[in-house]
Image (tube, rainbow, N blue to C red):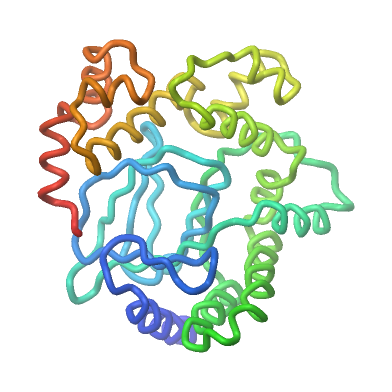
Length: 299
């Protein structure tokens, strides 16, 4: 009953600060309210390291063939930049999907993780940089107190940083703490791959240099392939393709640029290959896909 009342209040406050469908930024840096009033088409998005806590409705994200479903009372953690395809699966005009996105401050999270992990050795396993967990009462209380600050903006500069730290602590000391600690420590394989991902993202038009990326994180080429796939669920080449195709879709949606030029802008040398890989990932050729998206996507 207590958690039910908590979600009711959370929905009320988030509704007040979610005027439009899509991402609604708030006065609190690092806190965003996502709203969707209808079942949503599958959209590719580069998910940045964040915690996504569902207040109402449900959603799923796809990473290759793996599906991660989460609904009210659950959260999704993404610890490295991942090209995912998201789809809201439960929503309506009367009860829209509502989700609080809390950006992960890697430095603060790492400091808390080091403190909690100080008497333990670093886990030898490499976990995927995404998973779903259940929200317990302690975490829920903290999230609600953070959301409440939107009603008292004068308190935000003083209390929001403390609440972010408490949220990180609740996650790291909770049932999934060991997994999160493993993914956020600087020495972990997850953070080493995050460093390689940042290098890839600097210029997605450049061909992959696997040897350079392996040297960057001080490992062999074969081990780099292995841990990259474990963390992201994709091979380095698949990851780069996803980045390029997601960026291409964004360009086609927001600019009056033709398909051929878009293909070159994101690093493809062959427009034919671009069309083929775009169709394979998104199900329809670029022009037809973008026309459909512009018709369906809320403004």
